[in-house]
Length: 423
Image (cartoon, rainbow, N blue to C red):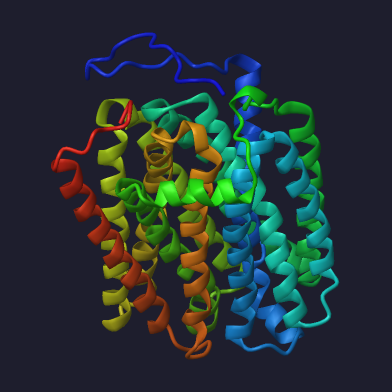
């Protein structure tokens, strides 16, 4: 595994700017592939959102049961990362990655054939578990190549690619709904991932040499996780990753019903709003990438956590005061866009001290993001499709947790905890 790159210069802030170990055409290819791999979660969830009400009607399922198809995918994404992370530390990045992509394509085709909502729930869990390999290994590959502020900048660059997924996926899903039934969305996902499998096989080299891989079986993996969870700062970073992401997933699960059934939006109008919010993630990510060296990942992470908390509070107030779409849409935009500041920086900070177990550390980050969000997703529909407060209350709860995490992180770092390189 490659260590941190050598410094090539010092900006006005006094922080060294690392030389980029991946240059030219190879860098562009790596960004495109890793960005697409990181986008497997929004592809799996967002392309399907405009079809969620239609699927519920087609399979005679309740809103809560329909949202369980999202929950199952989220839990699959969470559990799959916990498994794929240590596997990539032991066997290298390529083999687990290619196996996961092949499994995802097969599971997507099976989802298109699901005869009932309960069969679809099970298959969505399998689809998520297979797709998790791409997400967790993409983060581990970045840590193989970069560290500190350089890693934060590269993660932000990836958001130019994976940020397109939540913009294009719901629009593509809505267009597919004009041409076919909801099952066609899964056929399209299978085709896209087959193309990604070919691209990864041809264009993504192994970044973890055999000499740096971890030996041992699952007992060793559990020992690694125990060590990670004993690091209190790492656990705080896990919470900082999970809580804003869970707020976004509550929005993902609830917004199709709230915006379409309550506020009367068409699937096409909903997809435009959803894409606009996703664009906010990209803009925030690129802004953070430009500031990563000068400001530092810690300050940017704090800004993202505060933004998530402020947006969630604004959303709750807008619904309680019956402010309508002019109050709801800006608040949702803030909740979603803040993820663009949180994720690149929390990923860089959390992995900075764990180069020798980057896959496992990346897996725990993914577990926090998707497991917490998966638990919240079905709760937004418990009061039916005509209630908007459950979504707002759940998002506000996660926002409060994000604010508390930001405060504890600030206090702990003020107490003098040694800082990871480049932070």
